[in-house]
Image (cartoon, rainbow over all chains, first blue to last red; front, side, top):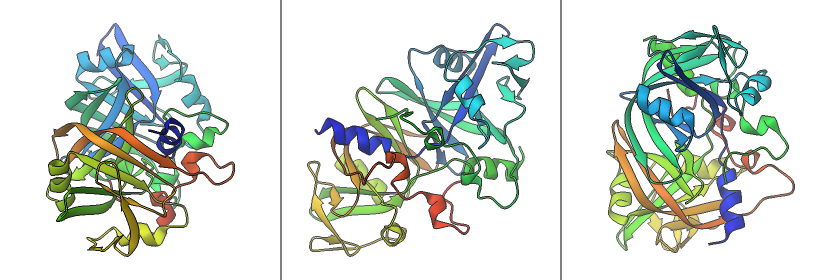
Length: 167
Length: 167
């Protein structure tokens, strides 16, 4: 296999940016920026999110059995970048951004254009990430004007330069 | 759950467009436009593709144990739209577009900017689509100029109007 072609072809997949959060109990809250996300079923509504196996976020999602995906708005690059590295909970803020507890317990960022909360209904481990399948149990979305929903959130290519998570 | 919010939030996920193909034997060739695609592992390189359970494409992928994802170029909207509906194999064309047989046997469209071929290494059925996990075993990619790879393929929002596959 041509390794350069493999890398380029995989980097051609466009991605939106999300802050994935989970909470298993009072002490264990985890979050991180993710982009390996896709819907995987209409009925029931389900999504796939792929999480690095050796991450703290992974262990908290496994313990909690639930997670939230917070969509990052077009103007919220600072928020996305903040969650590239581990962040601390401080009162009702996560990495300095206000959150509230969702129905599942997962932190929901209060200033994002959309979020979904999910119960984990399946998972597969065949590589260095676990493929979690989550069934959507709660959702919020706020669209500005007439924009298509899929043009209203931050995408990886908006970050420019050589920032990729894939390849 | 707010069903309108659920639909809008899920439609916020941006997607690239791909033609998914598979061949289980001489007689059984299947293809279709898909967008529920994400990478799911770096090492080994794997991707997730979600395929409607009741589709012909689904049964051929299950029989073949392999598939190819052909990336649709920015100027190839006609190609993507062609594969929204079932197409016929005619000699070395699929829906009127030339293809060659890949290493896995899956049809590779000859005029696309990139493709990957995968062996199915896992699958999960929890909804109306199967989540197939494919390990990349062959790849081709051709980038024009200095474009970011993830800005070089057709995305669902390029189709405009109210065309979505998600929500």
